[in-house]
Image (cartoon, rainbow, N blue to C red; front, top):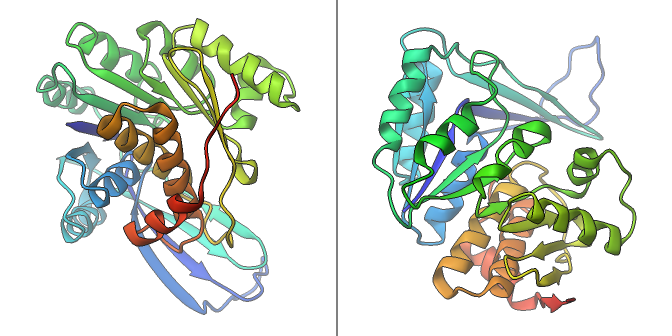
Length: 306
């Protein structure tokens, strides 16, 4: 089973405007709304790919109830903890000539709520995977990922971490199965400007030496590169298509990678399916759908570089 944790789910409310101007009344041409949060995105793509998954996390108030209703509508297995106070957040995304986002804070999470989440995770065991993705809410200790991994480290659980900065670096001592920085995040981790493929491979390998088993680096329009646990290097060029959506592509890539690996044990194929899922979401208004993923996957070719 693949479990995901989303500490601060949202409703992502997108408004399409022709010409957005600050300080003036703007009229929306179209509105869409989706359940948001990196872990939820991973679970939704996993569900479409036919994988068994369970989405965990927190929700609160009427917005939290609406998030749950949308997840149920999408036939996603979920068990969100209901907070007694506050309300789950709404993230507003304005799409026009440029894209603007206003993200809400979300509800306050109490220590007893975190303890309840830890109790849920006690169900995990050998061969389960746990995806910890996204930033940490202000009300939650910034070492929560480490706390969770330490709690589960002797149970055979494989960890997948999609985080930035010290939040990522501090988890490497628990040897996560997969981490997924993008190129800019990789540069920020080491305080350098990475400009060449050799530099990218070198710094990704450093993360492996620090504990990560597999390092998947998304390169946007340039594709993606994988340094696997055998220290082999694979590259998948980006698919061709019209960019419509910058939200959820990396989460979709993680879901596709895990599906590809668990079904075949082949890291090259995992990179291919992950790249197809990421591209399919980038080319869609919402998260990817299975027909588009399959169409893109047929045209992708993975190259082993080392």
